[in-house]
Length: 253
Ligand code: 8X3
Image 1: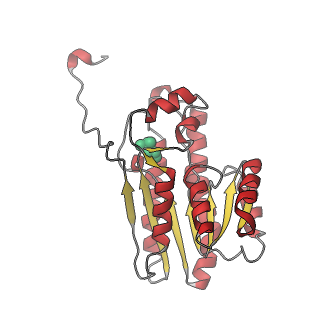
Image 2: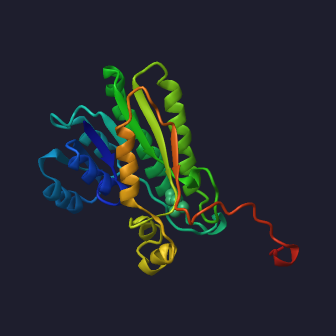
């Protein structure tokens, strides 16, 4: 199969690129960082096609997708993995530029790529879209004010695609990971403050990027008549915070 993976240069996308190639598939890896993609190309060989494009630059995505050479031009599986969180400030202290970036990448970029690739799947009446959402799309937490809603969009988008694709041989799965270590997620969120990022995973047996990649691969091995609509994964050590009550004496008013 030919697998198109966004965010291929790190985290789940990198692990998934390696895994699909290891299993004899071809991968188009989209990422912004050209040098990383080139290193990955050197590692993975001819079955990997590096596509340098910025998720915020729709023209570069369009140019790349519309000019894919054979045999990479027929996409069997689209893994919409690229996404990011920026900051953990409460909404009233957040930087609006951070909100815009999250909306641009997690919502606008993801929908644009899907819009570009879905028609060829419909034409062939064959394909699979896997969207990487998050537990943050279901459960709010402090500081997830826009990140969470962008992931809720992805979850709703996946389910709505399923509705539109009724009667077609095209599957859609929404993958919802919780706390995952060994990725750049928190380094990006804290803008390079590695100590802060490390503290998030200290003393927690978090899910790994490789474990999420294994799930992405497993999904593609399921029979075509079976659609996993949603799959939510958390470390055993993570759970819901529950409804928080602040006592009058603790409240700021
Ligand atoms: C990331 C999940 O729990 O780190 O999408 O916010 S969490």
